[in-house]
Length: 368
Image (cartoon, rainbow, N blue to C red; front, top):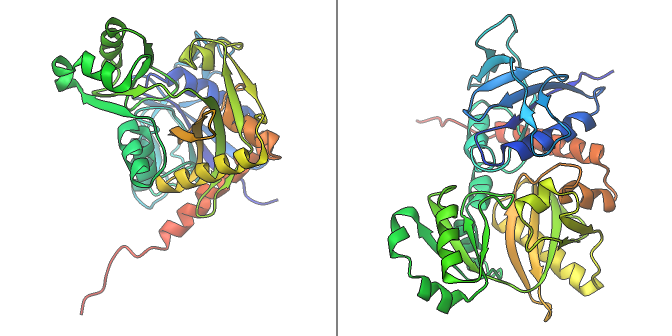
């Protein structure tokens, strides 16, 4: 029997999407083939502390989406950078240091999906699932990603960007004249619809701006695109593949955090989406083009709007999309012929392959 792959599952984190991460991690841990993988559970609390967790106690209220919590009492650990053994070092208790073959950072939002964790893992020379530092940072920042997409000729919604120091100077009338109502207000660096509001009046716009600034120092205000919400899952490094498209049919006013994660009936997922062959190909081609434009690797979910005139606008790219039981990313692959457990195997192998490729690069030069 071949040696098991020792995989660290990172979950929780210092993010408004902490609870989503816990639920995603729970699904992934349960689905991993324990004959193939030696699983190391690493919970990160809301203060940023890392703990080794036991599989039986790492979550509290695991079945309650509103009250799920990280278990307490694990051994405190730190990650030690460098190409050496025993990278995961305990700070207390009798636990021994751990050597990890690969890490799955099941972390959504800031301090996990934005390039910060990816940079730490790269310094530690540990392969990890998902895009690298650049792709993660670019896709997390909705302002920067939209600018890159515009430069590449990829259609995106018209938007205004503001930083917190500009709050008092935001001209609400100018926003209304330029973008119209309704419009959407979003923190630039969060996912899962956290902090997002829909405004139909200047008062709602002002209130929404204040709320978005609670979550980020930069926000974007976007025009509303009237179209069907279509999503594609993308998988791969240099030669990515794309799933069949699925459609989100929100049962709330829009696809909010509550609709995504707290209300099992908050949205209907139509897989596959009811599209003709030309629409499917156009959406899949645009998803791959967007994935490569934004320097993605491993996995991402590309979300688009399909308008009545068949014009397609890219809404956003999620580099570590949710893996809960109602999440679109794994459901799309399942409908495309890749089971949940096989999908995890492929993601882990892609991470290991990229790590091996990067280790072959020269890190010094010979002079003379």
